[in-house]
Amino acid sequence: MKLIIINKRHLKIIAFAMILVLISSVYTIGYNNNIINVFINNERIIPIYCVDTDEKKIAISFDAAWGADKTSDILAILKEYDVKTTFFLVAFWVDKYPDMVKKIDSEGHEIGNHSANHPNMTQLSEDKIREELTITSNKIESITGKKVNLFRPPFGAYNNKVMRVAKELGYYVIQWDVDSLDYKDYGANAIVDRVISRVKNGSIVLFHNNATYITKALPIILDKLKQMDYEIVPISELIYKDNYYIDHTGKQIRLQ
Image (tube, one colour):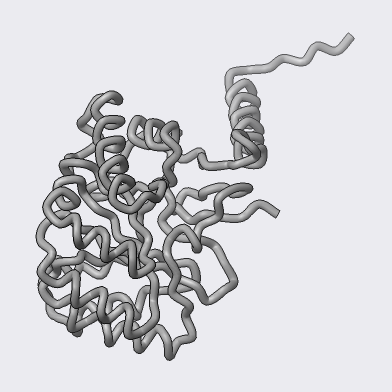
Protein backbone atom coordinates (compact mmCIF):
# COMPACT_ATOMS: atom_id res chain seq x y z
CA MET A 1 0.00 0.00 0.00
CA LYS A 2 1.31 3.42 -0.98
CA LEU A 3 1.48 5.99 1.79
CA ILE A 4 0.73 9.66 1.04
CA ILE A 5 2.85 11.94 3.18
CA ILE A 6 1.51 15.47 3.66
CA ASN A 7 4.14 17.95 4.79
CA LYS A 8 3.63 21.43 6.24
CA ARG A 9 3.74 23.04 2.80
CA HIS A 10 0.92 20.82 1.56
CA LEU A 11 -1.11 21.56 4.68
CA LYS A 12 -0.78 25.30 4.06
CA ILE A 13 -1.93 24.88 0.45
CA ILE A 14 -4.94 22.82 1.56
CA ALA A 15 -5.83 25.34 4.28
CA PHE A 16 -5.58 28.23 1.82
CA ALA A 17 -7.83 26.42 -0.64
CA MET A 18 -10.42 25.81 2.07
CA ILE A 19 -10.38 29.51 2.98
CA LEU A 20 -10.97 30.44 -0.66
CA VAL A 21 -13.93 28.06 -0.83
CA LEU A 22 -15.38 29.58 2.36
CA ILE A 23 -15.01 33.15 1.06
CA SER A 24 -16.58 32.14 -2.23
CA SER A 25 -19.53 30.65 -0.36
CA VAL A 26 -20.09 33.81 1.68
CA TYR A 27 -19.74 35.93 -1.44
CA THR A 28 -22.29 33.99 -3.45
CA ILE A 29 -24.89 33.03 -0.85
CA GLY A 30 -27.17 35.70 0.59
CA TYR A 31 -28.69 35.97 4.00
CA ASN A 32 -31.51 38.03 5.55
CA ASN A 33 -33.99 37.50 2.73
CA ASN A 34 -31.24 36.85 0.22
CA ILE A 35 -29.57 40.22 0.72
CA ILE A 36 -25.81 39.98 0.50
CA ASN A 37 -24.61 43.09 2.26
CA VAL A 38 -21.19 42.02 3.43
CA PHE A 39 -18.15 41.62 1.24
CA ILE A 40 -15.21 39.89 2.85
CA ASN A 41 -12.35 42.36 2.91
CA ASN A 42 -10.39 41.66 6.07
CA GLU A 43 -13.84 40.92 7.53
CA ARG A 44 -14.87 44.57 7.26
CA ILE A 45 -18.52 45.42 6.59
CA ILE A 46 -18.75 47.99 3.80
CA PRO A 47 -21.41 50.68 3.33
CA ILE A 48 -22.83 51.76 -0.05
CA TYR A 49 -20.51 54.17 -1.88
CA CYS A 50 -22.07 53.85 -5.34
CA VAL A 51 -24.30 51.57 -7.40
CA ASP A 52 -23.48 49.32 -10.32
CA THR A 53 -25.94 50.22 -13.06
CA ASP A 54 -26.08 50.59 -16.83
CA GLU A 55 -28.53 53.46 -16.46
CA LYS A 56 -27.27 57.04 -16.60
CA LYS A 57 -28.59 57.66 -13.13
CA ILE A 58 -26.90 59.30 -10.13
CA ALA A 59 -27.81 60.72 -6.72
CA ILE A 60 -26.86 64.07 -5.21
CA SER A 61 -26.70 64.50 -1.44
CA PHE A 62 -26.21 67.36 1.00
CA ASP A 63 -24.94 66.98 4.56
CA ALA A 64 -26.41 69.57 6.95
CA ALA A 65 -24.83 70.04 10.35
CA TRP A 66 -23.91 73.71 10.74
CA GLY A 67 -25.73 76.69 9.32
CA ALA A 68 -28.64 77.05 6.93
CA ASP A 69 -27.90 80.35 5.21
CA LYS A 70 -27.72 78.83 1.74
CA THR A 71 -30.31 76.08 2.07
CA SER A 72 -33.23 78.13 0.69
CA ASP A 73 -31.13 79.09 -2.33
CA ILE A 74 -30.12 75.45 -2.85
CA LEU A 75 -33.76 74.41 -2.75
CA ALA A 76 -34.67 77.14 -5.24
CA ILE A 77 -31.95 75.95 -7.63
CA LEU A 78 -33.06 72.33 -7.32
CA LYS A 79 -36.65 73.37 -7.96
CA GLU A 80 -35.64 75.34 -11.05
CA TYR A 81 -33.88 72.26 -12.46
CA ASP A 82 -36.65 69.91 -11.31
CA VAL A 83 -34.15 67.79 -9.37
CA LYS A 84 -34.83 65.80 -6.21
CA THR A 85 -31.97 64.99 -3.85
CA THR A 86 -31.19 63.62 -0.39
CA PHE A 87 -30.37 65.76 2.67
CA PHE A 88 -28.62 64.11 5.63
CA LEU A 89 -29.53 66.03 8.79
CA VAL A 90 -28.01 66.18 12.26
CA ALA A 91 -30.45 66.34 15.19
CA PHE A 92 -29.25 69.69 16.53
CA TRP A 93 -29.68 71.15 13.02
CA VAL A 94 -33.23 69.79 12.97
CA ASP A 95 -33.88 71.42 16.36
CA LYS A 96 -32.55 74.77 15.16
CA TYR A 97 -34.20 74.80 11.72
CA PRO A 98 -37.48 72.82 11.93
CA ASP A 99 -39.12 75.04 9.28
CA MET A 100 -36.26 74.25 6.90
CA VAL A 101 -36.74 70.54 7.54
CA LYS A 102 -40.40 70.99 6.60
CA LYS A 103 -39.42 72.87 3.46
CA ILE A 104 -36.89 70.25 2.36
CA ASP A 105 -39.53 67.58 2.79
CA SER A 106 -42.41 69.53 1.25
CA GLU A 107 -40.37 70.19 -1.89
CA GLY A 108 -39.97 66.47 -2.44
CA HIS A 109 -36.44 65.87 -1.23
CA GLU A 110 -35.45 62.84 0.80
CA ILE A 111 -34.15 63.20 4.35
CA GLY A 112 -31.59 60.88 5.91
CA ASN A 113 -30.02 60.51 9.36
CA HIS A 114 -26.60 62.10 9.98
CA SER A 115 -26.47 61.41 13.76
CA ALA A 116 -27.61 63.52 16.71
CA ASN A 117 -24.41 65.33 17.66
CA HIS A 118 -22.04 64.67 14.73
CA PRO A 119 -19.57 62.51 16.68
CA ASN A 120 -17.06 60.02 15.37
CA MET A 121 -19.40 57.05 15.70
CA THR A 122 -16.55 54.53 15.81
CA GLN A 123 -15.62 55.86 19.25
CA LEU A 124 -19.07 55.25 20.74
CA SER A 125 -20.55 52.22 22.48
CA GLU A 126 -23.33 50.29 20.77
CA ASP A 127 -25.88 51.89 23.10
CA LYS A 128 -24.64 55.38 22.25
CA ILE A 129 -24.72 54.60 18.53
CA ARG A 130 -28.35 53.48 18.86
CA GLU A 131 -29.14 56.63 20.83
CA GLU A 132 -27.56 58.89 18.20
CA LEU A 133 -29.54 57.25 15.43
CA THR A 134 -32.84 56.95 17.26
CA ILE A 135 -32.91 60.54 18.53
CA THR A 136 -32.29 61.95 15.07
CA SER A 137 -34.79 59.82 13.22
CA ASN A 138 -37.47 60.49 15.83
CA LYS A 139 -36.99 64.25 15.44
CA ILE A 140 -37.12 64.08 11.64
CA GLU A 141 -40.11 61.75 11.60
CA SER A 142 -42.03 63.94 14.06
CA ILE A 143 -41.75 66.82 11.57
CA THR A 144 -42.20 65.00 8.26
CA GLY A 145 -44.28 62.01 9.28
CA LYS A 146 -41.99 59.87 7.12
CA LYS A 147 -39.79 56.93 8.10
CA VAL A 148 -36.03 57.53 7.89
CA ASN A 149 -34.03 54.56 6.58
CA LEU A 150 -30.81 56.11 5.28
CA PHE A 151 -27.83 56.89 7.50
CA ARG A 152 -24.57 58.65 6.68
CA PRO A 153 -21.91 58.48 9.42
CA PRO A 154 -20.34 61.84 10.34
CA PHE A 155 -16.89 62.27 8.77
CA GLY A 156 -17.60 59.08 6.82
CA ALA A 157 -16.22 57.22 9.85
CA TYR A 158 -17.51 53.70 10.39
CA ASN A 159 -16.47 50.28 11.62
CA ASN A 160 -18.21 46.93 11.96
CA LYS A 161 -19.85 47.97 15.22
CA VAL A 162 -21.41 51.07 13.62
CA MET A 163 -22.49 49.08 10.57
CA ARG A 164 -24.07 46.28 12.59
CA VAL A 165 -26.06 48.61 14.84
CA ALA A 166 -27.26 50.73 11.91
CA LYS A 167 -28.38 47.65 9.99
CA GLU A 168 -30.10 46.21 13.06
CA LEU A 169 -32.12 49.45 13.24
CA GLY A 170 -33.09 49.13 9.59
CA TYR A 171 -30.80 51.68 7.95
CA TYR A 172 -28.97 51.52 4.64
CA VAL A 173 -25.56 53.05 5.41
CA ILE A 174 -24.59 55.51 2.68
CA GLN A 175 -21.21 57.00 1.80
CA TRP A 176 -20.22 58.60 -1.53
CA ASP A 177 -17.87 57.99 -4.43
CA VAL A 178 -17.70 61.63 -5.60
CA ASP A 179 -16.60 64.14 -2.96
CA SER A 180 -17.07 67.71 -4.18
CA LEU A 181 -14.68 69.00 -1.48
CA ASP A 182 -16.94 72.06 -1.38
CA TYR A 183 -16.10 72.55 2.31
CA LYS A 184 -12.45 73.31 1.41
CA ASP A 185 -13.46 76.58 -0.29
CA TYR A 186 -11.34 76.05 -3.39
CA GLY A 187 -13.88 78.00 -5.44
CA ALA A 188 -16.88 77.21 -7.64
CA ASN A 189 -14.85 76.11 -10.67
CA ALA A 190 -12.86 73.64 -8.58
CA ILE A 191 -16.09 72.09 -7.28
CA VAL A 192 -17.53 71.84 -10.79
CA ASP A 193 -14.39 70.33 -12.29
CA ARG A 194 -14.03 67.79 -9.52
CA VAL A 195 -17.61 66.55 -9.68
CA ILE A 196 -17.94 66.46 -13.46
CA SER A 197 -14.59 64.69 -13.93
CA ARG A 198 -15.47 61.93 -11.42
CA VAL A 199 -19.17 61.26 -11.83
CA LYS A 200 -20.30 58.02 -13.51
CA ASN A 201 -23.36 55.81 -13.69
CA GLY A 202 -24.52 55.02 -10.16
CA SER A 203 -22.47 57.72 -8.43
CA ILE A 204 -23.43 59.28 -5.12
CA VAL A 205 -22.19 62.88 -4.93
CA LEU A 206 -21.42 64.61 -1.64
CA PHE A 207 -22.13 68.31 -1.07
CA HIS A 208 -22.66 70.37 2.08
CA ASN A 209 -25.65 72.66 2.48
CA ASN A 210 -23.66 75.61 3.80
CA ALA A 211 -20.45 75.42 1.75
CA THR A 212 -19.21 78.84 0.64
CA TYR A 213 -19.43 78.29 -3.12
CA ILE A 214 -22.20 75.72 -3.32
CA THR A 215 -24.86 78.03 -4.76
CA LYS A 216 -22.46 79.20 -7.49
CA ALA A 217 -21.26 75.72 -8.40
CA LEU A 218 -24.57 73.85 -8.21
CA PRO A 219 -26.34 75.38 -11.26
CA ILE A 220 -23.27 74.82 -13.43
CA ILE A 221 -23.01 71.21 -12.28
CA LEU A 222 -26.70 70.56 -12.90
CA ASP A 223 -26.42 72.06 -16.38
CA LYS A 224 -23.45 69.87 -17.21
CA LEU A 225 -25.04 66.73 -15.77
CA LYS A 226 -28.17 67.34 -17.84
CA GLN A 227 -26.01 67.80 -20.95
CA MET A 228 -24.38 64.46 -20.12
CA ASP A 229 -27.87 62.89 -19.99
CA TYR A 230 -27.72 61.97 -16.32
CA GLU A 231 -30.94 61.47 -14.42
CA ILE A 232 -30.61 62.75 -10.84
CA VAL A 233 -32.64 60.94 -8.19
CA PRO A 234 -32.79 60.66 -4.39
CA ILE A 235 -30.49 57.99 -2.99
CA SER A 236 -33.36 55.64 -2.12
CA GLU A 237 -34.31 55.58 -5.80
CA LEU A 238 -30.75 54.75 -6.85
CA ILE A 239 -29.80 51.95 -4.46
CA TYR A 240 -31.03 48.35 -4.52
CA LYS A 241 -33.18 47.39 -1.54
CA ASP A 242 -32.73 43.62 -1.82
CA ASN A 243 -30.89 40.90 -3.74
CA TYR A 244 -27.53 42.67 -3.83
CA TYR A 245 -24.00 42.49 -2.52
CA ILE A 246 -21.38 45.16 -1.88
CA ASP A 247 -17.88 44.69 -3.24
CA HIS A 248 -14.63 45.78 -1.61
CA THR A 249 -14.87 49.28 -3.15
CA GLY A 250 -18.34 49.89 -1.75
CA LYS A 251 -20.13 49.38 -5.05
CA GLN A 252 -23.59 47.90 -4.62
CA ILE A 253 -24.16 45.18 -7.20
CA ARG A 254 -27.43 43.51 -8.10
CA LEU A 255 -27.57 39.73 -7.90
CA GLN A 256 -28.53 38.09 -11.19
